[in-house]
Amino acid sequence: MNIRTMKNFIIKLRKANKLSQERLAKKIGISRPTLDSLEKGERDITLGELRKISEIFDIPTEILMDEELSAGSKAGSQEFSQKSSKRFHNLILQCIKYGADDDGKITKTKLAKLVYLCDFASYYKFLKPISGFEYKRLAQGPVAIEFFDIIDNNESISVEKKDKAMMISLVEQPDNTILDKKEMDILKEVCKKWKKANTQEVVDFTHRQIPWSMCKNGEAIPYELINMEAPENVY
Image 1 (cartoon, rainbow, N blue to C red):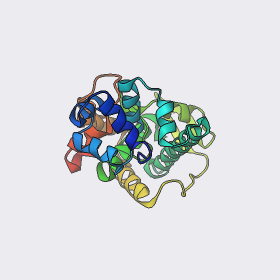
Image 2: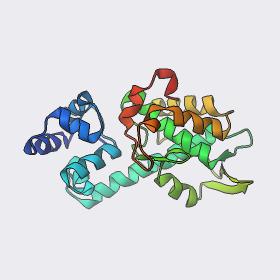
Image 3: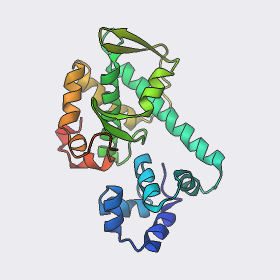
């Protein structure tokens, strides 16, 4: 999500509520320099950050989206939502393509972890996640709730049960025009590293990461936390 057209709105909200950058950043769960970058329009805002701002100032997320889109129209907000969902959908399909076993299949849990690692690795490198979706701390590791809806209602993939695992495979190849080259490069790096690993190894890795360990069960995981990791522990 591009912050440029709503940066003044955030500044006005902060000042109207007599909050310093440091105090507001702490409430959002990001660093003061990151908030400063948001207010200057130098980086994108994530969906998680937008929702936090919505909660802090008790303003519906839709209004913030409308402000960001400089239209104040629901059509604009829906267009953003559709674009974001399309990117998340493509991220999932690309992770199946590059992260599945040689038979083209990958467990549902491992796939969810690869998607998470790609989004957070992109944020670590570029301060911009691939999808911007919010991830929560669940029993089997970080996952975006929307992931389950896409897996359960997607004609582009096949789902079959094998023992206790749900195996996912592609029915059709993903569109290669949705994600840009640097996003695809980081995605391929993540998938290549974990392609031969079993599901539990990937789950254990995400459990050792700072974003997981610093959040409570069911809590949203701020993208910002990945910046506290050593480079070799990002993915």
